[in-house]
Amino acid sequence: MKIIGLTGGIGSGKSTLLKFIQQNGIPCFESDKVGKELLDTQLKKDVINSFGSFLYETGKLDRNKLAELVFNDSGALNKLNNIVHPAVGRVFEKFKVKKRDNPIIIKESAILFETGIYKNCDLVILICAPLEDRILRVIHRDGSNREAVLKRIVKQWDDIKKRPLANFIIENNKLEIAKYQLEKILTKLLIH
Image 1 (cartoon, helix red, strand yellow):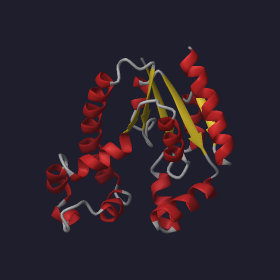
Image 2: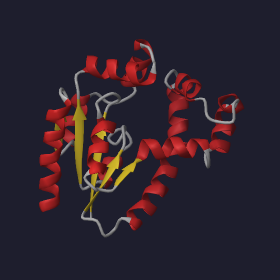
Image 3: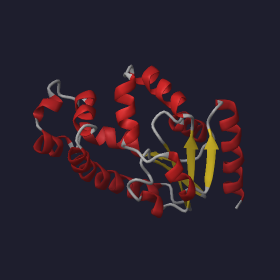
Image 4: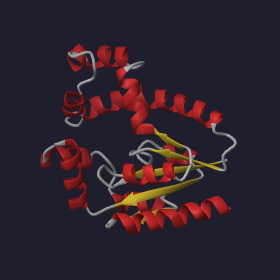
């Protein structure tokens, strides 16, 4: 079994292309989604101990408050990453065991390179998109504002830094073309 990393900055279209992969029957581990689920369950106590109960006033994590906290304080972001990433890694190990009979599995993570997780992947697919497109997608998707989106973008590596580390790069300027590029890559991976 080969582990294929799938990454791209916020608003690159990674989640949309991940759905396309899932529709093709390839097992996908969604690191970002698992991390969010863990923050509402197993990691709730750790987050409260580290940052305070104000993040869970309604019983569920207030993601906007958390984002405001960690994207304005790199120390808080590091602390959060140290809580979330090991827990997500443990869930991924169980996923790998369950899916061991598949020729390939996809490991999605927005910060695959930033965390060094890419080193545990056999190959990496990077989704890139023009900055302005990314900003507009996130504003539309999250109801966020431009300033908040830019704060999140600058916490991730720039595509220029990621490109040399990727085995495949998809330019997501138009979704249909990006899907075609992805389909060619997946075909190549499944043949080899």
